[in-house]
Length: 249
Image (tube, rainbow, N blue to C red; front, side, top):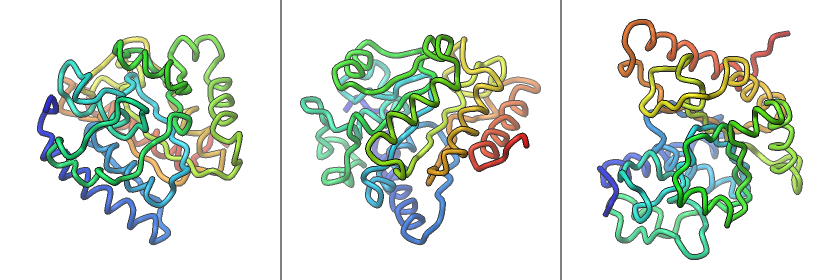
């Protein structure tokens, strides 16, 4: 299949799904540290087993909505949402994807369960599916237009419209942040979140009181020269403190 290292990635995702599921059933808060965003297949699978109605906030420059059939690169970090999406005609046959057999009868993510924040590099098929499936997506244009506060208000309005107590999962890709601030990541795209916008997302999710799991991914200090690795690492730690509840006052 057009899925690089799929057996290894699938094996890791399966192990992570079991660990996250156990953590939730034990009454703990799963905080997952990546790793590239392919780990989202595992963390989300584990969460969906216990909380099938979870609302997902996917903070990322990319939609990660590809599948082996649509990916141009075969890189699995561009597929976690595509693999789990409950798509009426394009669902993946996991019996043909080595390592991912654990998903054959696994839970799926419905299009209205996820909100994207920070998109700015979206493939043509991903763009079409976002429109066709009606996935709520806020690009950097929308953040410029509404402001980050308005975007977060609209995010919660969408995810809480049927259940104000719905649990939330935050999946935060450090490449959502502008590479001037976070250069040590694998797929940088100019024009990302500012320092305060990046923190506001985490602060707003924390203040909702509904955050029940989180992950931060694509942070790799070896991918930047000089101080860039340390700066990105420090920003990642600060973002974790924000979505775990640290506030200015």
